[in-house]
Amino acid sequence: MRNTLACARNSFRLLTAIALFSCFLPASADVDTGRQLYRSYCSQCHGLDGTGNGINAPHLEVAPRNHTDRSEMITRTDEELFKAISEGGQSINKSVLMPNWGKTLTEEQITDIITFLRALCCLDL
Ligand code: HEC
Image 1 (spheres, protein in one colour):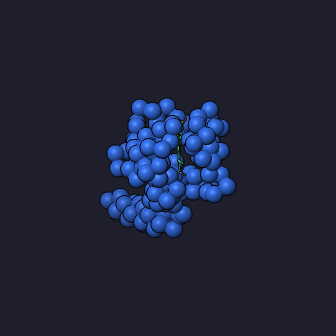
Image 2 (cartoon, rainbow, N blue to C red; image 1 turned 30 degrees about the horizontal axis):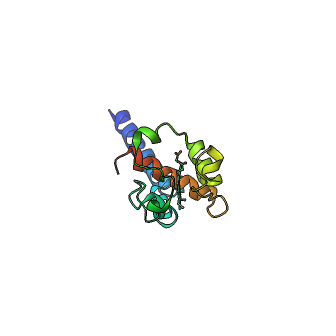
Image 3 (tube, rainbow, N blue to C red; image 1 turned 90 degrees about the vertical axis):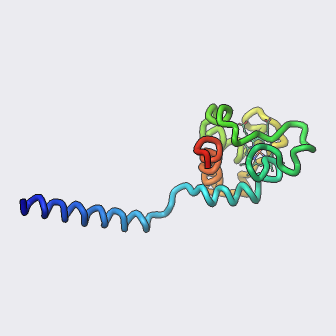
């Protein structure tokens, strides 16, 4: 009995330690940062809600991707999205109207945006 109690107490201490420790770990990819970046850099074409209806959209010959379209978005790998964002639409045989952001955004910022895109299309945020 005493052993069981001691064991439970130790497990509790261990869990508390892990919980505390994880608070100090840097967040890896961040949906909120991704959302803010998307609003600043992408929404004028892709729309604030990501459906592709941004203020520039009516003036573009090729419609900006609807990033909320789950059936399309799940066919793209993270690597493909990264390449499209970093090197522009042309790099993945899409329209040059999709600009390249590799010199504007850091790799970490692009990763945050991809995390946001995944949440937008597929997690019903
Ligand atoms: C000037 C308008 C414009 C801006 C700004 C813009 N895009 Fe695009 N984007 C487009 C267009 C147009 C396409 C569609 C290209 C096609 O289908 O040929 C596209 C396509 C894409 C694709 C490719 C989707 C696929 O079909 O695989 C991704 C990913 C993407 N945009 C992400 C972004 C992100 C992230 C930003 C902001 C950092 C951004 N775009 C900013 C116009 C824009």
